[in-house]
Length: 178
Image (cartoon, rainbow, N blue to C red):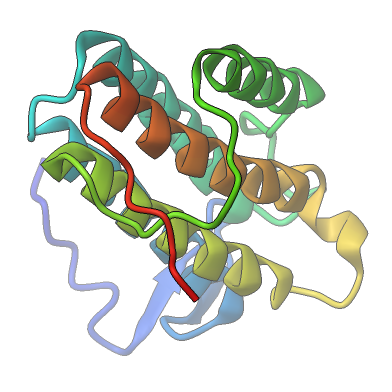
């Protein structure tokens, strides 16, 4: 199978539904941002975070393929894996699990820390932009299904994951000094 098809040379791309749309279509921007976010998590993983963090990053990367498929497929056009409430439940339970080990937050912390934690913080900001891109798909929030909720929770998860990486690596956080 060739990697290039030439079908996008005219500035369009195909959704999973088969519909062709411009490459700057809001749906394409949204799943493109998911791809960027997934790559950033891979970048963080390449920096050898703590083993438990690596395991979590791998799970998140797999989940992001589901999110991308969900965003690339208008509802009612084709059956693909969709974000489920159990995915959001997992994020929340994992946030709670990590947060239980962390020192209590008493101020904002500056993004950074270990190289992996710093990349996870970048991923968090990409996630926030991705959430905005996904919301732009439609005014009707129902079209997003659970993706919007998942992305909102994922950004929280990534914040806690970056803190957890620093904690496990005994790397102190720097509090924001107003």
